[in-house]
Image (cartoon, rainbow, N blue to C red):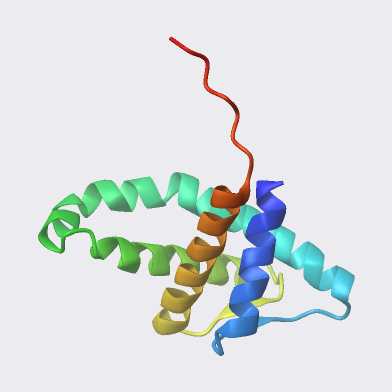
Length: 124
């Protein structure tokens, strides 16, 4: 379910941000592209982002966490680059497009987390 929501958030970013493009012959092709891009985005954030956060730990402290916005933009940009290499029809045109796209995806995922039902926690 979360992968589909990520794909929808990526679609929202392509719709709002002028420098993020989704190419495809049909709506179904675009949907499958978005699902694959969402998978790549998840993998990049799972494996690459922690390494960059560890290396840039001092920058997080120095900028009071604002460096996280740059890291998120770079992860979004990397996702766009990998998607282009795999000919998935998803293109991110530069850092600022990646920056705003990452913010839109983050906001969409945050709203999804707020609206999704929570499992009750067992009493200790």
